[in-house]
Image (cartoon, rainbow, N blue to C red; front, side, top):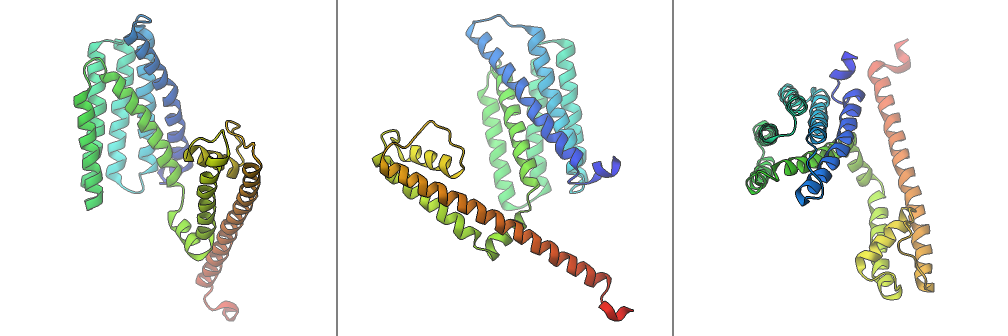
Length: 298
């Protein structure tokens, strides 16, 4: 268990971060819904229920940072410690919301703690990687957070925090997903195969067909409607909100559908073959490293 937690790409930290990021959505959405209903006067504030939702939001965010700390431990010990601190702060805020209930004091503490962690995280990101692009992006993020914080009044500050928690959970999910993808390997595939040309050709076909369908199909009013329809055809999802009724539209749909199936098959085979060749090459290198003299070693 300890060995798995210490690995930067361990399964338990990754799954835990994704799980609690997903669990944060029901609590935040429910809190936003209740807050909007209370603000409109359609229902009275249910303090115990809103306190429970706040507790769930902050506890989920705390566990997201806890598992992220273990997931990033191998990269930086300082990052590990910082996220452990964030996890402790958020879990403590969640428990505080449940103990003290939904009131002005609790909201103030929760809002201050959340924004302090968000702003400090961006500042630490600048100090950790002092590259021009990283500094500019994080400085813009800090400016945006300050503008959001200054624009929120006392009544909407908790709503803004819940929206930011939703965005944070969504960002965690995407960051965790893309962290498992070897970008360097994908670059090699695009560079050494015809994958880029195949994908580019499919995109050109989708764009061209979108323009044509706009003029021949009554259900497709704009270029974006045509692009949405082509996307549904290529991915074989078939939402059913837009259908082709003319002969030209149906003909183009058949061509694009067949082309999409061929492209998916080609890209899949390219990636599988590339990974197979790469694994075979790595195995051969490992054999040569372990037995440099080959058969003459005997």
